[in-house]
Length: 272
Length: 305
Image 1 (cartoon, chains in turn orange, yellow):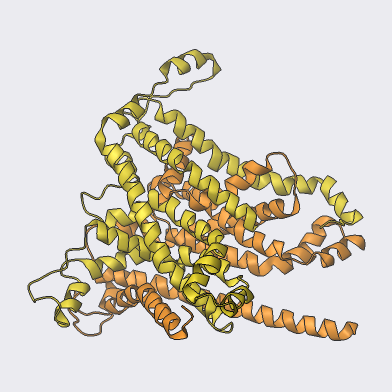
Image 2 (cartoon, chains in turn green, red):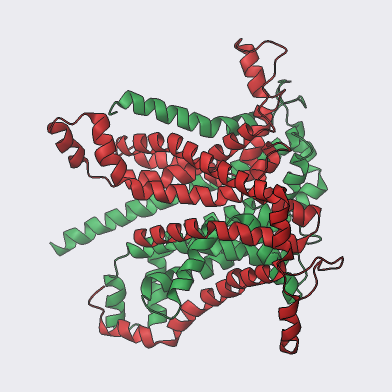
């Protein structure tokens, strides 16, 4: 059981399984041939046809706007929810509240999507751009709440207490001390919320209306018609954007971590 | 948190505190909890050819009597009458159970290998597991179509290495096997991460003590490692099992006409047949089936938090 060779084999096979399909998808977006199994040489023609496809570009623009707005509102609400869960151990209906935070994480999307749609219809709201944003805000805020909550739980409160002891008002303490300290988690939460919104097909399909076709809805309708290199091209661009985002974020958090460790060293030397 | 300082207590009487709780609370009550009451209500109404396509049930408090007398369980009776729905329901549960088991079978060795890797390597390995999760779900499922279809890359690969004759083709696409592959592929990070976080925290001195006392490694695994990782096993299984049961995209894109899953049935009733009350009834029944796993999941989460 404890053989390093055995472990390395398992990890290699596991990661191969996770990455080979994505690599194949990216490679075939540069294929000159329309057929999936025939390699016709390197070509960027699918990127060109994709670029001139107005419907696709409209959908990409709608998706970007939905993603930015819903990730931002979701991050604000999710951070408040995380603060409520960690800082206030007792308030009426806390059980229900934490239940409503955890349930959307595992709830099948068809249920969330359908139930929200029925709410909008009952309220007489026309479906479209804003209903998708409300729907996305609702499920992304729960993911943000979980990410921020885990940061708040490992958080040293002595700085906060010092500020309050020195007479800093609570709201100011939050913006001057708490928020900067949990900021990496808030940013991570925003990015997660943005990607989830970018990715969502099912909930958006239920809650969208005329003029608010998002990219996943568009891709899905084309995928049903068959595999085309043009879809591979869009997917490659999306994968590229997400990879760059994740790399930048991980470099950012690593830098912040190094700075924090260095500050702690300086502080430790100062006290001894 | 035992010695809360005086100024912090003032925070507890501060009106800002109530705002912090009230804003996300009210949002979730309105957009997450209230819709479930509506879905339950509509599942009890009749289909109508109108927009919205169901007969309104509740019109003011004056009509409360009508409301009660109009309620019926017709949609639910219809669901139990037609074997299609019961089969879709059972088939979803079967696919979810088998997939969760497969995920454990593949995810556990991976998580264990990650937890035993050198400490310096672990953050990179975790990153490698998370990265595919950041790529679109739809894209990852789509990637498998090109591989699995009869004239796809798997056939080409098997023909090239000579396992298959030039006229043979892989018959996996549009079957349940393709659905299992798609599910295992998409949900693997969700299974590996909770398992890894449970295994990583494990105290290695226990295993050393066991081996010092002459316990063979496989026995030490079943007596020590596995029982200690059970919280991770439960968390990972629930995180996968619950959404898989209601999965729509994977059975729709990779499954065949005979692949029955309740999420797909709900989608067809809603978008295809425009039968909103029936779709709502399907959703309510799916939700009832998932209440127990969801409660287990939440208790697990609270223990972790």
